[in-house]
Amino acid sequence: MAVPEAREGTPEADLLLGARPEHVQLSAASALRASVLDAEYLGTTQIVTVTTAQGATLKARISSEVAVRPGEQTGLTFRPEKLSVFEKRSGRVLRSALHQEAARG
Image 1 (cartoon, rainbow, N blue to C red):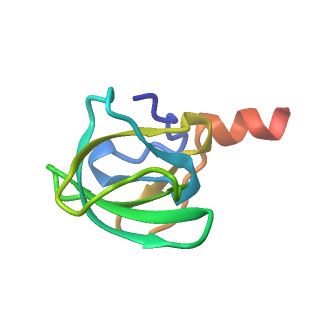
Image 2 (image 1 turned 180 degrees about the vertical axis):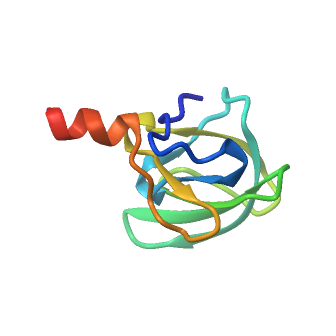
């Protein structure tokens, strides 16, 4: 998985990766696996809550036409151009290569 490089010199152990639910996708082919905890129907979309083997909980906004059930295993993919890097302790978003490219574009 491509992760934006933080530009502020923060040690990797002190970083968190952030993704909005609409930038998370379920993919059977992905090596990053998760277990479905819940799905909230919202009409044409649904918010699916998943947890990874590492204990991270994420939400994905997907089409309501995709059938998911609690306990089901799935893979996760992300839109790498939409990921953010945060400082774990403060929650502050860090400048990254991604943000510098967006400012130029």
